[in-house]
Image (cartoon, rainbow, N blue to C red; front, side, top):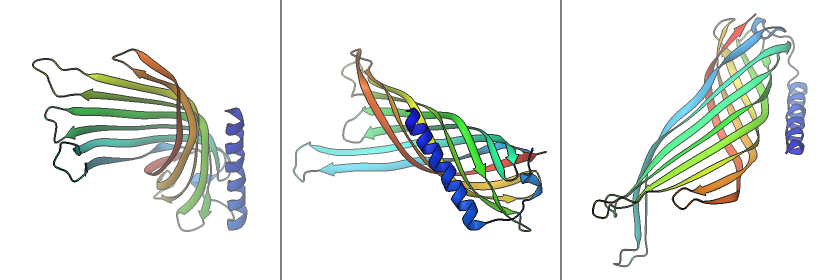
Length: 239
């Protein structure tokens, strides 16, 4: 795990260095000067709504016809200090969650609820490349640290008489997670800026998969992350 941490962090630093050399930006602007502070919130949200259907073309009951809907969101708080002009070092906190309800149309009374969440905390660094006189800047960034995942699935089969048998599965895992991103920021004053960031999230989490009804547990759960997000947010710059 530690080897992956240093390998990913080294790649991120090298990528930032190359981008800086290629663009060769000169100077900086007041909000990006050494000893200043920056912090704020970014995120996105959405609503999933789709249907699933499949059949073998025969007249029997072997077919799938379900509707799925639910809410998902990502919140990220990145905060740090300018250790040099244009260069920030600090912390990245992120929370992702989605909740889905699956309702089979061909099985009356049956439903499935799935809730997933992924939390992250780690070291964060960003390098701004300002375009002097425009109020705009672009930046590469990277963060690396600890990720914690949990997924709960509750399946409600059709009621039989007055009894409802509920099956539940719970997956939990944690481990090393890293983020690499690139974005642009627009300053509306020396203290406020709006930004958009594209981020890739990778890592490997290990844990357990538990069948709550039977008490059986699988202890070899492995989750490989390969997520892409676009975050929109507002940042506050202080000196």
